[in-house]
Length: 140
Image (cartoon, rainbow, N blue to C red; front, side, top):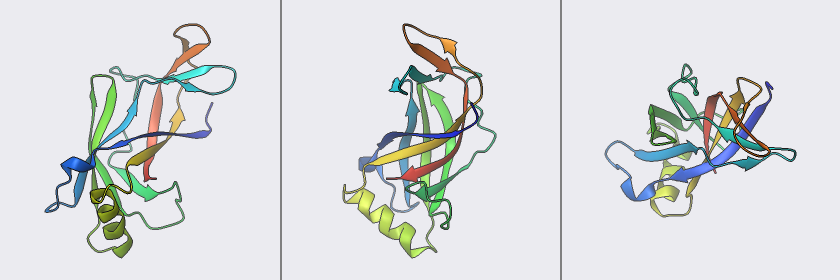
């Protein structure tokens, strides 16, 4: 259960802050994801999410071989969602390009890379609810 996994969520581009080069993001939800033999639900209750790696690196398309384009800060659980603020690096030209693509509505999603921390608890037919730890957020 220690493989790295990904899932998509949303950028909230209409709330961009140009002065801070920041964008609010929904990093994850409890929406089930089909993993073949079961539905995976990431828990979003107190104690379900290990946020010890915060702030999280912000990268492109899960390519950790490239320089981070920013960070995702202010991580918090809010009504079954993990939210944060993506802040882009002013000193990295590619970060400014990605930020502008978000402002322009071209890039509209993020994807979180994470690890499952347990074997899951039954949460319905063919559904397992997991404790988990995010390790990066990607603009996709």
